[in-house]
Length: 192
Image 1 (cartoon, rainbow, N blue to C red):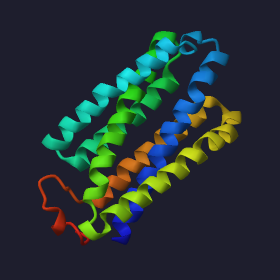
Image 2 (cartoon, rainbow, N blue to C red):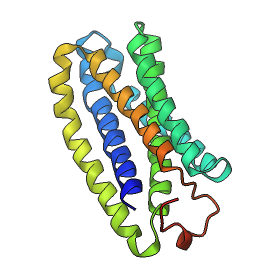
Image 3 (cartoon, one colour):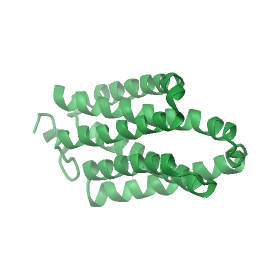
């Protein structure tokens, strides 16, 4: 289980870092750059509402195309949202990129929460999921500080770093090469 665990834990670390790095720094940074539309609670509510269909689409994908592919698709979509944000220079495009990132990142979380426990046999499932959650908390703590260090090079560099972490997570999930959809959980204990 070592290889599988390292890959899924890396994904949890990187996804958490990207999620909290983006949403902790982004609103205040945009306000200082003159994009006041993110200051109000209305836009923050809109960002939160954009997450609901992302979560719902992830649930649909989990049951149709499978856990692994759904997760990889949402990771790529999350990275794409970061890259669109970097390229956007107009308030409308920035708002659309933020909504897209919010949608895709919550879909990523939904798929990750479904896929991770299924990678472990019953006797290790709680331990595997607990470790993943602990590593995610570490990423959530690390990300705002890391952004603070990177932001000197430019805010776009920080968002580009998060896009890279999300793409590396996609590769990590691809290397797991276990699809758990439709599989009896007691048969998933060994490396495949």
